[in-house]
Image 1 (spheres, chains in turn green, orange):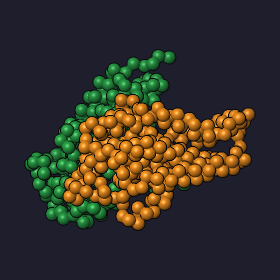
Image 2: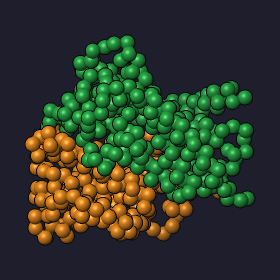
Image 3: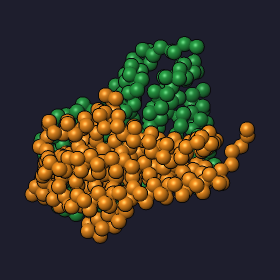
Length: 265
Length: 240
């Protein structure tokens, strides 16, 4: 049953959003702008300096673009988890539990906000620009890596969303705490991770595996040495890290849902 | 509240790190900002964000949409003044819970640049309060647009996305190229954030900055007052 019901649910969400075309177009444009605000910041900074953490403007733009696409895709599906506190407080989470479908996929398709495509489009445009301006010795493997990186990044971001939002099962008003890591990771991964201080880097790049969203894959593509000293093959491990993150997220979610008690009727 | 603090501090740390990396590459100083000034700039900004409430709740617009606004309109008060009073009251609480903690956090853990003369402390407070009034006036205008648009969420989203960059929250206004800097200081945006920070850091003439802020506060409040007067004449509430 689940294989036909999810496409139908997503289709219904998409049709409902497309019915107000002007409003949808404005929303889409706003999302492109939202993505480009960080681009302006990068360009303003690079009007004063030639390198950030030892990386040129186009190299930083490549990382920013990878992070932006990955975050956009994750936001499209996992962003709805921001509503979890409402489900829990109002007790409507019970409804999800009663249906013969997984709770997590149900929340994910509860509101697929199509306007988030604006973010992805905005970042894709920058990626095309950056790829045309950095020097990469292209091989078939690197082409595959370029395509796999945003997808692996999206899985990593989604896992971060699931794990940090699970906190809301214990602390109902935990949304802002989760945002520190979801939106925080989005901002964190747009820059080379060697610019951050060691404690922040350990937390956001390795415990929360933000470094594998854009930084290490970009190093592998560019064929550059890691200033932090990790070997070159690390740049190819992002899909593996993504699978690992998804497995961890799955376990955390199951554990958290088992902890849930309804508010009664 | 602790959760909100976590988000605030994490974003502050990220911004400090990125700006510090840029400073390092630029031999320690960009446009009057050395490392201490940058830390101060970031932590005051993180505090002001919640104090002036740059990203509001769009509450009035929701009440216009639902029709509840009619209750607000037939009360014997001036709606805009009442809402301003509410917002100033919120600011009083936010001063303790939102503005002070990140500033103290920054002072204790980072190199911090204190104002060059003690008189700038009270001037900074006045400037921050005027910034709150300007922020309220901007949000009121966006809210009031719902009287014509009914659904102003597009405009509201547009404000949320662009205001942080234009007011000097994400990057100091003086980092922008000269033409952009001049254009920005002709708009009310720097009055929301960059103005109080400049007064604290000793950048520019404090009286000129305050006059600039007060000008925009009065102009935008007046605009809000006129907009509301027109809106009241055209409001139609369904049902009874």
